[in-house]
Length: 350
Image (tube, rainbow, N blue to C red; front, side):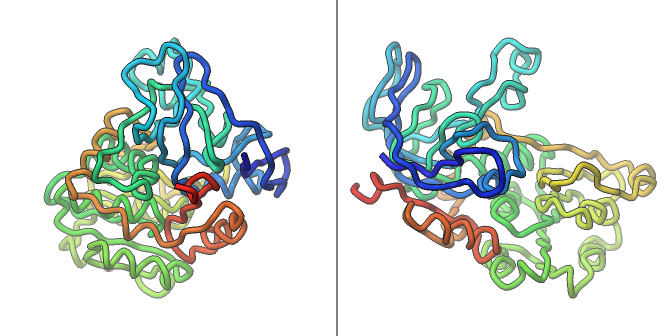
């Protein structure tokens, strides 16, 4: 079978290669991949700007069908439609694992990063990490469960958006738009989405279609003025920073209300980011870092999809075959769309 492989360290060094079909070890299952989404981390791995362990098949946002059971697997059957959490490698015995935080275990080696991922026909995953895809949920939308679960864990479980909150989403990328959808479901009274002029053409219009009350091109407009206008000068109850932009991170402290909440999920890519520290001290907001996802976030997300309350269709803007991976990465990298799906060879046959 063919796979998109990051075969060595260094910028680039990604190509389609013939690889053996993996066999599931005891407790694992083999999954036939039906759809896989490109994450920003896939691009960073290509550019040698993200932790990874080569040679590695890329891709950790996927949906598929169980095609083979490893020895000792119970409760699962061949043919079941599934998605999978990405906390492969979590040790299960460290303090974090033992206290309910296996998704941040330092030994974690996710698919597409530490073990072979989903930009291929088949991969293997531990049965304990699987979740069933509801019958009325498509493979395409199910492939976005990983970023959706990250947003649920960050925005709803950690930052805890409440009914009546004024929420600002900084960054209209996939994480930002999914967070917008979730904030609306959670009962936010208003949601402001901000982005740069670079993202205004393709991404801010999607935010409007997904229910943003106000969108702000920070290259042309003042986000702070928009927030103060909607909050009677008090500031936002919640600022969810998804962009990783140092400028946006600093602005989060200026637009949050006193004793409000800031959620940080965007990766800056730098070692240090300057912030207006004294502004934060005097406002006393709660700053919460949001990383990865919990079992409950995956179950919550799948239930929202099954109920129809969450519709991820607007987030999927492009679809490509595995052979078109370079074009797919370019679309994602240039902010020409939101989520970009790749279909491996086996998916095109089904």
